[in-house]
Length: 195
Image (cartoon, rainbow, N blue to C red; front, side, top):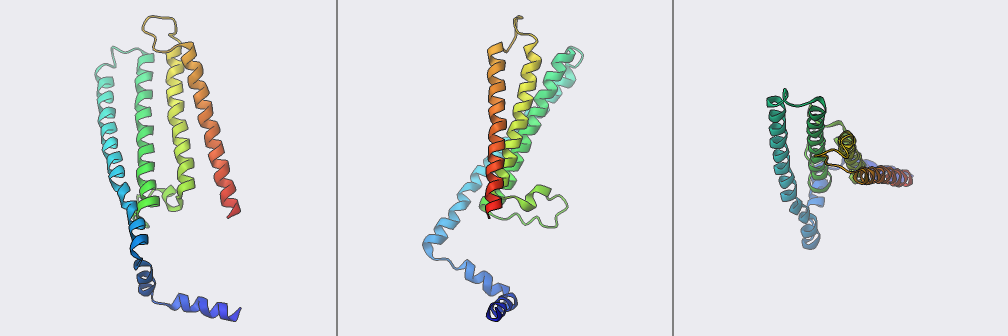
């Protein structure tokens, strides 16, 4: 017990720079493998470009809504607004993947103490990120399903974009998304409890 205490105090009093240097000097193969995480950087930059495309799409749809608000009926306005919400939720999903994925798999962002640091980022790991992504996908699916239900009132009319079979399949897929998210959260909770 006493020897354990002495080794702990020796570690606590050790120079942090020496500790950092011992971790920094990896053998060539482990260094290559560990450095390969930077290959993901172009993927995250690509997702930032995709985010820019979504911002452009949002502004275009918003401008279209403002210009033609008088010509649209209430149902059409609701569908356009749901489309805007859909774009925002997909954009939120992109932010989660970009920020959380980069922080988890590539490198620390060093946002501790920053006033705009997302609350969820302080305790993010691969399991939590998967659960958050599953919840975001359910939110996006919910918006799509709501749009489908609104358009379903026009089934059988000319220009209807959905069929009753399409509504059924979309509802089944949405239910599968929910069950998958529950399964992912349950497995993640079991893993955390075991550790």
